[in-house]
Amino acid sequence: MLKGLKVLEFEGLAPTVFAGMMLADYGAEITIISRPGTPTLDNLMNRGKTNLSLDLKNQEDFEKLLKLIPKADVVIDAFRPGVLEKLKLGYENLKALNPKIILCRVSSYGQHSPLKDMAGHDLNFISYSGILSLIASETNRPGIPVNLIGDFAVGGAMAVASILAAVYHVKNGGLGQEIDMGMAQGTFYLSQFILDQKRKQIWINPRGKNILDGGAHFYNVYECKDGKYFSVACIEEKFYKEFINILQQRSQINAQHFLDNQFNTNEWDSLKQITQSVFKTKSRDEWEQVFQKVDACCSPVLDLDEAVSRKSLGDIAFIRDGSIEARSQPIFSGFTNLIQKWIPNPKL
Image (cartoon, rainbow, N blue to C red; front, side):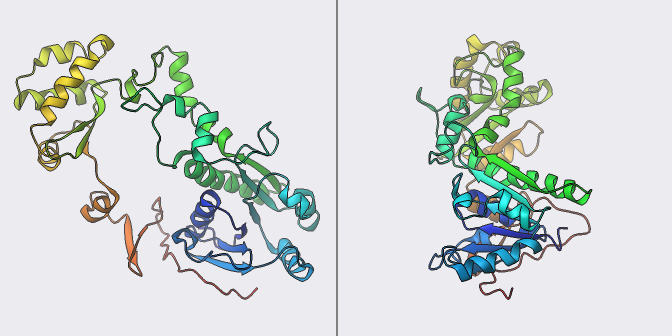
């Protein structure tokens, strides 16, 4: 898909490494610019890439990098704002060598915000963006999600989307682009749906009291008899009716009360308690057998190993050198990606 697209990826942490992996999975030629002595090889997200170890404070190594810029299409910057400028590798420097170069700068808080010089991780990004305040837990404090929002949805996938937009722009005759991908800012961008829900007075309750944050009995997670969990997401009427029908068949619930009060927030807590008591009567796998027969948007909560071994989603993973790896997504028609191994010693 991206055969011939040449990308230089400055060695970084998870977000830019994942962005580089996505581009490599789609066929781009990725060369990591690593610092001498760093353990770049030991990362599953470096598949399909080559590595070039350079000490950029060494003039000879610095000149080697400069010779690569005119041949490159994209440079991925994993440093804090201003670091490339100090190395004389800022956008103006790169553009002078290659007017069509695309510099994607993935940072915590963007290149120009008041927080630009601060360090941060995913939890910090979603804190400043307001997203963490929306995520409920069993206590009143915000819940801590795994670092898939700021690091990977934004710093990884959104960065790739922006790179491909810039590639298209250049292909159509435009000049190169400097992309300012602040992970905190990008995380706020993901909240557009929530902002719309607030505008419509749908998302107006405190954390943990709204439909999609654990407040509703019909959009929640329940513990089963064996200590494992089952998710319920029957928002629409037809799915909700199927769900209530299943509960009624296996317990003494008042089905009409459930149907009459689906969106009555005053009843949600009591309906959650009743629903939880029903789920406690069977194991997770027993409930899975029940709900496989109906279309009610109810699913077992699987761990990563189960997600792979059960193959409910098809072949989403493969085993290489004893390690589980995620297959490239999405699936393209007419394009088979073999997902090449790491190539430690490129010839450039």
